[in-house]
Image (tube, rainbow, N blue to C red; front, side):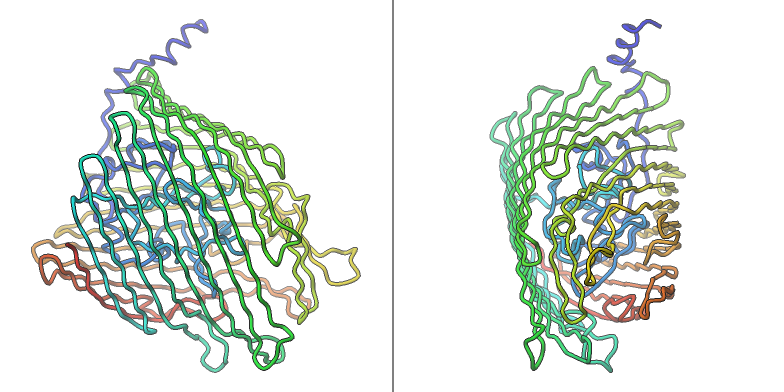
Length: 640
């Protein structure tokens, strides 16, 4: 066939055949009222599309799911999901995706990057669920659309819009550790505009898993957050969305140092952000979207040695990020869905631990084409390419090819292969830290290169019936130029720095079963097998378990206004590497299981009462699993 005939096929591609493949109806996920196939998502292609049509597998946690489990923050909402592992410390809760450390997962809010990483990890407990409409999770390399950090995957938090002409909600809960939470919202929706305002306050005491020592395991917490979101449809072709938010969190604890020295520790985090997103409908098949966002994060850390001041520390960190972008979504001949965009990002970081201030600028071009091929089966081929030009490390090109196939109506198969990268953090480049009590220095390396990965995924969904879904996901990620801490042999003192020396391979499988049951009940079971290996050290990655089993069971029985849910996980042993006397040894942290439960009842038309228990099996230890011990809380929800 001559080349011009191929071009004609590419452009028109038998649209009647492409349109003739009706979308399959997947099982309803969680407690969602609509079938999963009809849900819309934005993360997979940076544009609105049906969940069933995405080129890569997307897991969605809906508002109904959040309400059914009673999750109070994003960490609790993600706690029983296959392939995701949460780790808690005195600084908060961090997320690992498919065996990779937190710095390899990109976190977005309404498609915009989130600032405030501490030690390359983001605290997922800082995101209150009151403002979350749904959470979209993509596993696997996604740098083709989002750039740096999207190596293991992307977590995109979609915030709530006003939906009712006039409405308000209030929630109050009390529980263990003198926990108090108060949340409230107000919204209004007109024919062309809507506005929503929300706010909340939280506090709780700290906890100690080793009562025989003066040090504490978990920090106390006191904080608040406020947010606003509005949207305006000025004309049929012009729309405007805007949002703003602020939060403040203070955590306190006690540390024990060398020679039984005690330190009172306090950490204060403040964040502020504002977003403006106008969009213009150019034609029935084309939309131009503009976006601008500014965010600021402030971290203050105080370490006060009791009865002395020699080792006292006061550190300030100020982080700012500004982003502007424009994106064109265009359909061609009902066969191609093009996404083309350009964005510019500026970042600054000023910290007492850095040797100077961090400054970085980045300009990026990206494009993706979702092509419905002219075949008698539903086959979408989705190539994509992104170019990042950074003021610090130069140019990075990240391609990806994704394929979605429906050989029969009840089966969807997706495959993708792509490159991804992670830019060196300002800390890795510029840190200048001295620990006088131990006698070592950590210095940054401004010549670091980006880390690179090549990843492949193969997933399948089989809709056994309209109420039952089986799924599986195979993945592999090969990482090179990984940044590791190394000792500077040229230094006469104990000095550590960073270098691009490590390689790793992470591969595994996820399988799951979603089932709708009678009486409004549902069951979700998942199993994850991960082999994560450090190729330089020839050993498994530290802290990564091989096996993880998760399950969720819920019920929503409308005649009785009753809701109930159970969430559990079983996590296998995890290796840790220690060298207290200079001799390396491996310690296997034991397996553990968690179980959460919640029961809610509608006592009146607009009032619900609930009681919940977290970590009912009382898992946890101060060294390898510093999670909050068994806790209960109860409260009321008022909807007007």
